[in-house]
Length: 317
Image (tube, rainbow, N blue to C red):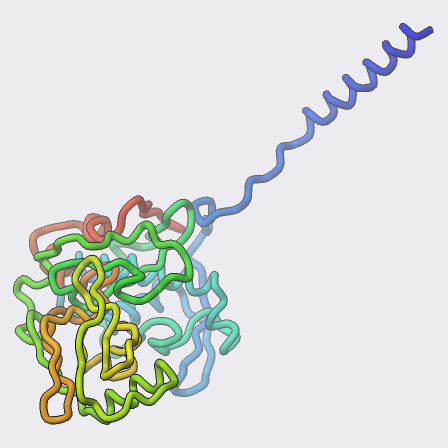
């Protein structure tokens, strides 16, 4: 009797096992690497000047972005590298939902919310560059990267924490502290080396806006801490210490071209800074891309020079 019960139990267990084995396997979690589009997607665009919303094909939107973000007369391969970054930035931005929370659209024409966008600057050169990299995006471990770039890194790349004080998510794909002579070759004199004079009152207000404390009239300034590439990550204004990237934004990022400072002084109640490069120095250098493109480097290889452990893949044909 016991043998019979065991036999029936064994058969039931076997049947259950076989039934389970015949079931389809659970679908793996979707990643960007698996995401493909049958055709080019359309996205929604908010015009920050007019308040209007419209649907636009992704590649047509990117033509307006590349034209605004890089000099349209530059070599096609440099513009094409910018297009790969712009497409990646767009897809990552859409996935985050940042602009949708603000305007109910995928992207906007604001450089603070999305990217610069100016259709009036579009040339045939720009159209060819975007078409050359149609559908191409950059991923790391199946996810879109933060596709950062700046005008010139001053000859050495920066990590996200150093150049942008970005610590929100890991960015192992950023090549940091890498020599980049192409970024300063054949560039403008005011990018290779510049001097900025910031009024003491503006410096005082910048520190107050960052720290919430009034440092008083400007009497002294110094570099409090440098990062691995040599950029200033902490500034000391009087007795107040503030973050370098935050100070640059608060005091004027067009006047203070970068935090790759070579000299800091107080003269006549003003802050006088000397430095090199233009921008935060994280990711691709646009001047570096231009110079590499002039040497025949492909758009994809330009991107690979500035980012590591990445894949450049097509989302659609």
